[in-house]
Image (tube, rainbow, N blue to C red; front, top):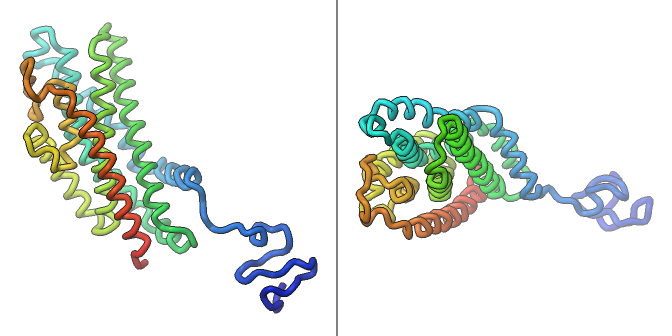
Length: 285
């Protein structure tokens, strides 16, 4: 009702509240606010990610790991000694662990870059921007988890075709546990790309690959979040970070490191998302 002072009855006898429009029974008058639920935010982020690089990367990474590395493994000395299947699993899991930090950087950097205009528009709506940041993290975590399940599925299909049934538990654990340890790196890269941009995020991913390959089996691994995914692979696959098989009873075969690494990753992700949420809420457009 145009020109009616706030708090005075309208035609229906209902007081008109300040800042609301519409007649009786409308969403505005019943107190609806611009606050999408978490499922809506997650679904929206997943819809935006299904077009472009993140989806293609999630699908192509498992195929790239399995097929070329399988061909290389087929001509290795281990394959000539009758250990082709076990060596194939070890090599694929090693590269999975090494590439996960770079995957975190690519997911976060590209997703934010391709959504820059839409994000600026969404930041003008009257709900906390942190909801978009956390929704993006959850959507990227789901997409990367799909990639992990595709890697497992490809191995299962190849194992069935080749008549190989051994090592399937190692494949599942060696794929999913490093993924859980990668969530801290994903949160780190998402905060970096919001604060410092695409280039800094890519540099972080490259450094993560180097740390994973060089330091994952060293005593300092626990202070380097980007090395955590590869550190999880080491005892599961029974290899050093360089790919050299571990002898039996080697200290690096100790599986008690797995819950420690996953727990640290989840805790780091929670802390970084809290810091990132505060940052984006206060960030100027």
